[in-house]
Length: 394
Ligand SMILES: *Cc1c(COP(=O)(O)O)cnc(C)c1O
Image (cartoon, rainbow, N blue to C red; front, side, top):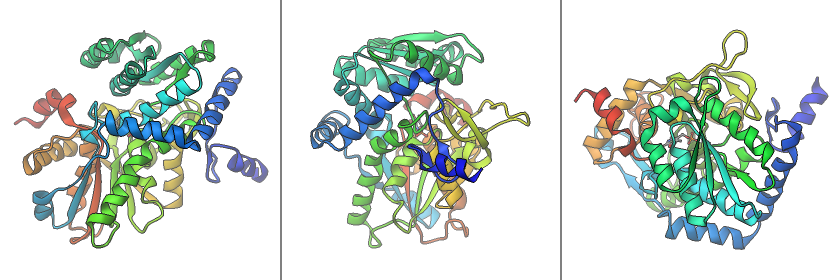
């Protein structure tokens, strides 16, 4: 047993002794994953690639994003709250950081089209955007039920020129769309590049997506160094669906004294309440029933509606380097409305989960008065207006 564990730990793309991550895909996809891993390693070491990506992030996506002190909220809470404003990027969330990186990589690899899976449609819209920008046709796999529920984002993808493929298998949601996208990739791996939307999937995706998102944490680190007497905040907080905005934020602070807090939706709490399992090509923590069947997640925030968590988060949890907590739907709604009224910023309901933990913990031993806390606002709330108006009962 111990030799198996040792092999698992040292294998590429493994996180920690419990062997999170890895590459659990059909034999036919191993070469495709290897090709992406090699191309990424080369590209990331190439100043030319890094320069192209940095130029797009600045001239197209609107980076660097500001670090905004939330002055009125801070005064109310007795802690200093700083907001990392991913809501101000083009397309309105951090997802653009990752898809621009992967689309550039696809072009460098000579791939001629992009495929992606999407649940609520946000990653689909981001991929459709990057495809339009770089002239790469995009095919987005989406569950039939999600297509009905997220008509607006389906229209956005079509307007951007993407093809939306309806997946009618299983529960007709994200889980099935991901499986279908992987099946399609098997048949078209020479031409198509599979653009994964979070720090999940087979190696190298969890590592690669973290590296594309670390721009959030690296920028925030520099901004804190310039703005804060302490240079580093006491707490760094981000919401966790698959975990990409949190992974990118944490990457900038993992070597500091800052306490890292990942906030999951109560109904999608893989890191907080999951057990070890394998899904979508990687080993990690997943919500499961007593027979080991993966449970469906339920959150008012579509982006947090995932039963598992990226393998590096499972590892950070085991290490005790990051702590994972949960927030209920109604707390997140209240936090979104409070931020709107205190600061004039309407966050995505996903991002409001991170803020809700701050509201709950401020002034307690979990987040003592006088602390400084950085919160990543992963996206803006325009997409959530209907839900917010219905749920907030204003
Ligand atoms: C998709 C999404 C998330 C969740 O994804 P992560 O990979 O966990 O970051 C969070 N916030 C917004 C606004 C999203 O669109």
